[in-house]
Image (cartoon, rainbow, N blue to C red; front, side, top):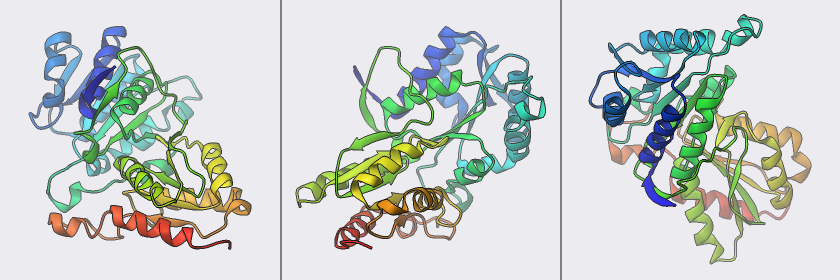
Length: 324
């Protein structure tokens, strides 16, 4: 076991996979703030034939990567910010996402798309967490919350036969934790119970998993037992794990730094309402972003994205409800 950062865990996964499989390549822009900054060491090790820099065109290098995948390679591309996926939605959704179906199962497209979150104040269009758009199109979407999860999920995504989009939350990038040096992978579609509890279930996504665990520890000292679940893969979703937890606790809070309207939290609430209504002892609560663009000011950002105090307030209000 070694203590490494979230970012280093991802790069370790990519390096190990590239050493294992010569068909894996990285394709993206030659920009010191983006692909080059995370792959500088890889370029020295694997050469320009496998670390391929392109002009600044997400539409162009995504299309190039899809063609490479259809030809037998396993490309990895990177978007420096979630909103850049919109530039290449035609390639992601229609070409990559529907390629196997359109070919009658004759063509696999083993493409990995890394979408790296922006941490510092930038323009308003850089702050979106737009994975719900891809979920609606049936693309596999992964959101690792810890360095250990990041390494295992990235390795599994690279070996998958379908396109996999990996969202890397900005607030996870500096996390440091123990990561195994041994070979391991985390299957897609399998959730993890991060904290065991009996009074209420919290389903959290990305960096908010770590916040929810901190809240669970704090509330445990006050006699409130919280179970925290990290879905890890948003699609396919481990519905059985969520239902099993809600069956035990009877109460559910969903915490997601995404849209409240037509977002991931809304889908989880709908699934539990349809398949597990008989287990619920109180209404489901969603803690998400406000339905407005995220402001440039960091002070105002805190008024829009989910905060620790909101989670505590939602949990304590549900705990007071005895039964619907």
